[in-house]
Length: 281
Length: 267
Image 1 (cartoon, each protein chain N blue to C red):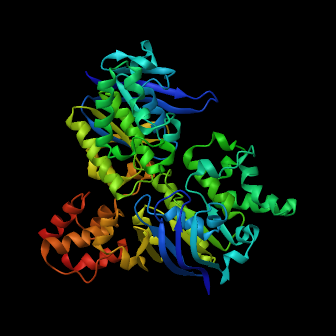
Image 2 (cartoon, rainbow over the protein chains, first blue to last red):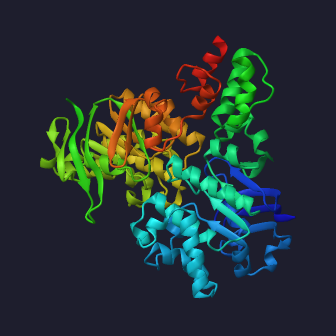
Image 3 (cartoon, rainbow over the protein chains, first blue to last red):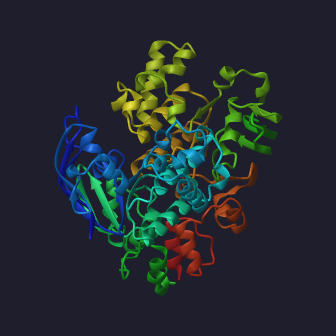
């Protein structure tokens, strides 16, 4: 079943001269993990805002095309219905944190309160998510006292606690150290195991290659590549769009260029790289 | 010694939290080094002491042989420039131009020289096309370059970059490499905090590792990326190319793609 479908979407911001996205079409199956990559300013965040209906409901501009959630046109859904189905984690955790709650626990529970859920269930679910994300120690801290990295995890927790079926996550690890970043990817992997659909915007390509099923590369308003992560992240041209390649893919490409020998394939994950290079050492 | 010298410095925040505990470090003028370590290890607190934004409760900081405790922040800021981690903490002017010109004007430079400083810094940061815009109309990744240009325009001899690589695409990372090389070429000291280990391997030789309020290693990148005790203590993952070499049984301590290919070709 298709969890998300984008059909011929073109969009121009209100005062902009040019379209930011043109004729974008793709669909995402339920349970799929898709990474969206591209240079800064290529329209990744705009696309995220389209997927959750924020464009064109709030940002007006010129919008053409259709977005379907669970095969239903987003135009026929209320903002509330969309919000229950689609969870959204902002790029900038400084914006997401509500500013009206004075502890991390209350901040994370805020969305559930708004759903009118029973008190006991709110407490239970909030406690569980803080535990799952290993954030127990932040429970009583004031959200404004948190570091960038901690805020980023609170932002993620406050969306995960809502248990949406589709998650759109915009650069969740930009402020995080390598270990916390890996933890976020582990959490995403667990969500995928629960058959959640995940759209992730990220620059950390080594991790995308290890975790994501599929990669969509956007440049100059259009989709340039949309294929299995292993296929996209083995192509040298990717770097000409401002997107890095995994180190092991770069090693494979450079090896072929320098030695003139052809590898079985260009590896994009460590495991494949080991097997590809084995016969040469 | 010209440069920055930290002698047994400790810093605790008002709420009693100690962020840096008895740290010593020497950075010579013209050096190019990286500081790495987990969130909360004390990296930002340490470097904020270099330019007087934070004052150590214990220990001393010397900049170009002068004890900074006897200097005002304004005096120190003529010597040490700090690019904030979050551009929002730094930017407050209505245009990119005014933002970069702020400190040169504050230093009472002539407007002609201010203009030259602004343009040269903007060129190095590849943001000349945005000088008339409001910094907040730019995406986060470009705003970071505005803050870097502002600090370059101050003309200080020592420059600290706090997580410049966060959220940058490949073009942004290459631009930062150019900036660092240009500054080093001018004899400046550059101290960079980053979580991007590939960037560390590509750009620095000396690496300072912090964990739990202390410096746990101050060595070459090769030593750091192959010392599993240091990596574990600081929760840093080895480079993928190093992991690959290790898995393939290559005995030498590889830290770059070129080295890896040399090793494979040698077989």
